[in-house]
Image 1 (tube, helix red, strand yellow):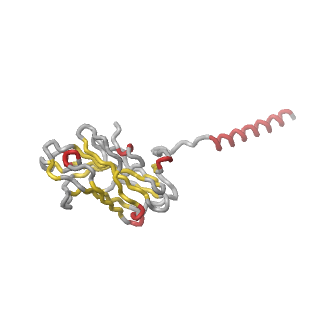
Image 2 (cartoon, rainbow, N blue to C red):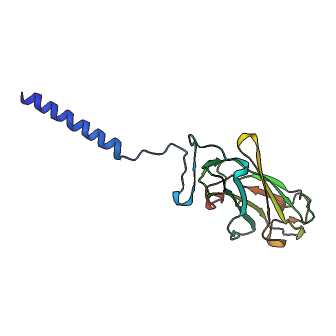
Image 3 (cartoon, rainbow, N blue to C red):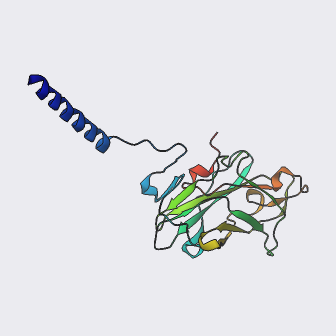
Length: 210
């Protein structure tokens, strides 16, 4: 009889311990998942079930924070804000074109990520709450031989929901030698390459932090 009672008690304790473990234990994040603080309103993950891709009409392009230059770097941050009514997702590399004051596209070469200034990590899915922003860094090397043409405007294009594309145009904040200007020295000058980050949930995530 004592053995029977002891067996029942042990089984009950095991069941109780299992229930507590499943309700209070932290479940590890899947491999490759990155999340940011919920206070920021944007987070990233490998997948977000049930959250739709952002519609083009829900997005607005805005200037981001000032980028403190590194040695030789000229860079600007741009924010993609969700002004729509619902949470949605963005991912990938935007297509970028820079223009001079006359509206002509400058003949830069464009690279997706990497280099000395921009993150080399691949794109993630960024989840944007209503009113939150995702970020893109656009960077280049300085013009050692001088400026041939000032870049005064930038256009970012990104695929969105329903097979549409968001296209936003914004001013380039800094002109001349400190801006995203086209250099003298021909196409092979190191300052003729614009490197673009993928869409990221924070401004810091766009940078090369090595």
